[in-house]
Image 1 (cartoon, helix red, strand yellow):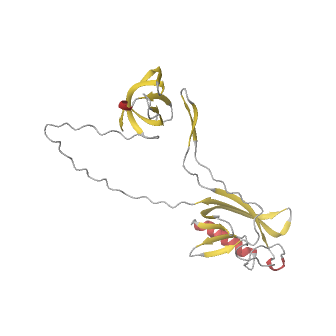
Image 2: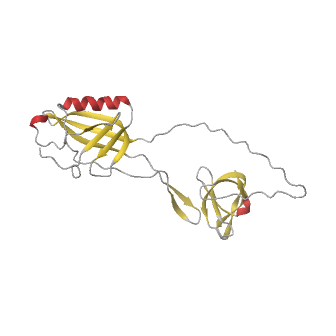
Image 3: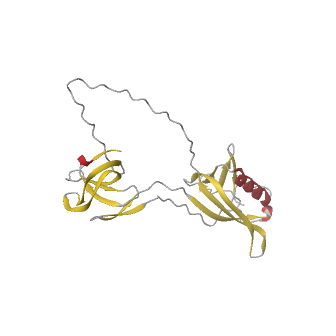
Length: 238
């Protein structure tokens, strides 16, 4: 097998433990990595459907590859460094699956380097061909997380100066803000038709903002039910 330079060689590597690495002996024929967000669609009265962009979803993919049983006489190997037997790869992959710990999946000469877990591993024989194992590896992206207990800060009460009344601080509102609303509802930001509905001391979510309009905030329930447009003076912090 001819050796490629490190800069051009494309290999599929799995790193585990303290920087232990191995390369699959034969590159998979196909690997597709999908990026997507958890978007949600909502219908707004007198506006139409909008797309609420969600957070990034975990990347995951499955790919097929083969493990030749006779490494020394196989001509289609792609790896620079090989283990002695196919069973060595099988045993290691099963061990990593059972360990339930993150690994890193890397495709050399590309930008693919993702921390993942082995969600599944399948191997066997296909079409009666006994000289290689047909394998499927299922990988799921891993994001580290940890719960942290935060003690609330005690706020010092400021006494109001005699003879002066304290004005209520303005509520800072942006898309997605949770507020308490008491108001009549309108079909558009400029007023339009007054809807036959009102909210009173109701906790709602601000979905759209039209800054210079008479009724700049479009609100909906916390269960994503559309309500209508209201004025700035009709909302307060939740």
